[in-house]
Image (cartoon, rainbow, N blue to C red; front, top):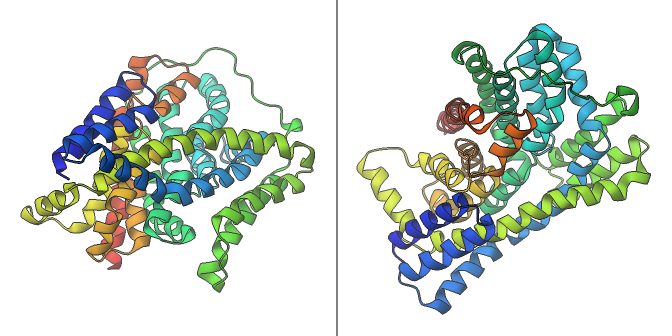
Length: 415
């Protein structure tokens, strides 16, 4: 199939998403039209689309089970406890640093980035109001930290990238630890040095959940600690515990430790609701990924890189960035990029772990564009209007570029 068909199909999908059609239907329509334009028959078009969905099905199952951990952290109040403890420990003097680290750690242990920002936002806005810190500055610190945590987390974007490359999830998470630290430091540099110190200040009263109604920090840490230990058994001891098992066990262990087994059903239902939306989105991304994978687009990109004498390793971060721009989603971007280009990336000698890690980092570059839910969710929780939220995009993009570049440099240094 011609590369032109894949490109036009992707452009159509982006256009439909911008026009507010469901992203799932937009991607399916784009995949179908792209396959037909590319020269496939109607029957063959359906086949490559369904084959693309089949490729992401194992990851979808793992993502659904990850909802147990995510739901446990959020509904039990553990995520709030952890964020409160970090902000209190670092103090008001280092408020931007504490906000960035808080969202980084929350995302790093399996909380969605938008949920992490929404969880930390009431604390951030309360302190920002007191210290007269502009709200966009607070939001950027949280978003930057969240992006850094997202590349080292057992979140859907990492799970799907690892699955499509046949790589161990824990190793993909570990590969981006240094890039995440570099990204965190750059976030603080951007927030403190580059952004003009003006903007709206949130003046309304903010309700922060009372700490006496929250679990203790020690109990709140059980879920992420158990999960990390289980995932680390394979690289350390050679004992394989699949994420399909490790993530829900961690969530259940946390609920038991916090004495909230009576809320286990509620938390799992909440987690399933969050993951169901992502799972459905992945079906749409699977269709367009199947079309791209069946096209000559990969060969075209390789030829272009060869002509420019660029290292073939940049296929991974660039594909992640481009697909995140198309979908305005880290998860969807990582899904399409890893499903479409994994074979090509592996064929040039890049390991599955680093291919997944670099695509995952690349997917943070443009996942915040206005046609995605993350843009609106984070702006809404801080009550920024469209123009004020739009103002942050260049700075968010720089943070994503630093993450992608750092991940690529880390790979090149190792090899």
